[in-house]
Image 1: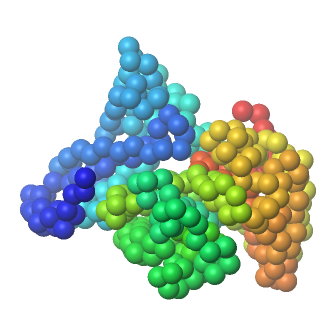
Image 2: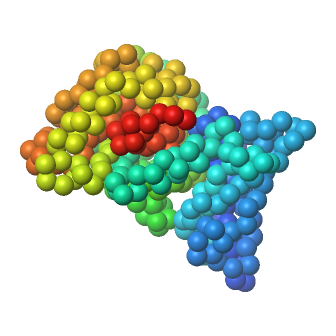
Length: 360
């Protein structure tokens, strides 16, 4: 059953009489799926702190028991709503228990505290979010119903209906993110057909997690309109096909200054002795999801072994060739899975390379 999306445009032009629709967005009890609900405001807020704390039934999202089900929604970031427009907003929220402590999947609370401790370092992040478009039948969009497309090779950064599957979704998402105020930096078709990537950043500190989560929400909403499913599974198709990651580019002020390559190499050395800790934080199942992806094949390093190198896409951490040439810049951690929590990824990088503190 499908709805005619063109009919909705009739209602989007109706006068809201100065009211604002605020869609509160949060991460549910899975640690990877998003939920959202909308309320009416009398005025447009300038800052998230002006919005009221709301609540939801946590027993229906895996975040509370039925006998004590209310979970608080604390607004933390605002974006323009590209779907209903007319001054309406998307609101990224933290989830809080009745005593105002963070829920188990509220990773932002801890990340924010860590980012506050290193503000003087001005940490920048950029995440390359890979995703796969799927049909409602569970197969990648555009793939033959009873077989497979041609082997990987012609699909990366491709053009043509026989190679670039679902470009309209990618372009709609790109424009929607720009409208919303997401710091989306670029996009491209990926190695596996029906797989795409977009990049968000550079973002400083806590904003990396806020922007990536809201960009994912927008992606899922765009896919609704096109009648396809967005999968963030890190290995959506078994066999000789690339998985999906969320490579995290990271730098501090010292790395970006002349001679910063020494700081980058020092950070990589620190990362090399925290492999297990990072792997457990780089997907929502404590590393189980990434076991299917980080095999040492398909442009990945083996999950059990840390490695690094210049321009090496089979390494755990890559130093881009231009960074090595310039002697300053950033590093790319290629281990995070496509369904990672960006708050945990960025917090882990800061704990290991800047604070050198894993006391939780």
